[in-house]
Image (cartoon, rainbow, N blue to C red; front, side):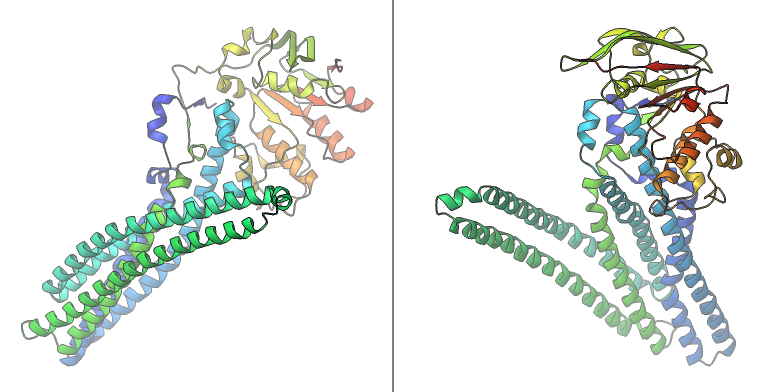
Length: 545
């Protein structure tokens, strides 16, 4: 069983934001993509060279050389098309894999981190927003890094290809690279400054407008409704000014890029004219190679600039620490605790704002026993669950596991023994197997889970689940199966049968309660007489005034 501990301050510097190092979690796909992109970039960069050799061989009527280069060109073209299709496939696969990794990190951190700091960081963040952020990080950063790698390889390969035609042309290419990078560094900073100014102006405008609209009654009473229009005009003027400034800077940036491209092409053509009599290649072939290489290289530079800006723009998203793997193994400080004997709840009491919720509650659960806690709303059932999971600390009494007070255990030591299920069903639009492995590394055989949890709507563990098409009851059964697949000694079931019909609820409950090696505590508003007979004991809680 894995032992996890939350990140300490000494580790924070290593985990300030998501970096390229996160690609280590998808080594196979990343490795394949690097090979594919290297091959693709090299094959594309050498296209102009092979065309040049075909034209040159044909111009001197060397039939065998012409046929040979046509074959080489055809093979290279096929290789380019194949690697392009492979790159597209593995880019999509890598993107989804990274989203899964970061999503898993988020939920692990959410489970393990219970302090106020994490709650503050994640407060109000919806899953749709999280998914959008993860897609952007995956597409505009990690994949963009690989695109950047591809463009760099293509520039290097283009240099080699042009050097095979003429070394002087290749040296011009290097000079253009240096000049382009310099222009990028100068104007990229200005563009980012202009974008920030736009955002600040819009934020200020929205805040002022919100304040005025919230106080519209006051404006009306004091006959100052014209102030609303005046402020809107002023704010819009400021935003327009910032937008014009951005457009001005961006247009200069584009202008200089085109100037560089024009100078590059002109220089190549001029050099071709100068050295045309000094190289052993036909005029048509040389000019064709020059023009094609210039076009290819210019497009590569444009792509390099766009990708660099995309990567830079992801910094705010990548700085969200909850997407990072901020939990880690610590064998020395976090020795594994295995539940072997008994959970003892000894005379515990808990108050919310001086209102008594639990008073002098005592009970115990021996290993393998099945007990239920029932009672009306507000009697403290959910509070008891949070106490057992170490989310709340009792004011009086104690909770022991095998004689050790849970306050002396880390959350990881405690949670490594407990599976918890409630009525909030997390379903990923991935295969059933991947859903089962979300919090567990060793899956239980599919046929066993299918039989216990009545998963008749799932035909195989590779079946892709669509959360939009599953009913609430079906989602609940998948969620219960995942909790069971975690294979923990203690299972807490917190009002998690409410979405199931009576037949499925009774059937599943009866089957899981037969397992002697699992200790089960079920929390519910009420149980049917038949359900009560399945438990070793019923703990009844009452509401305190």
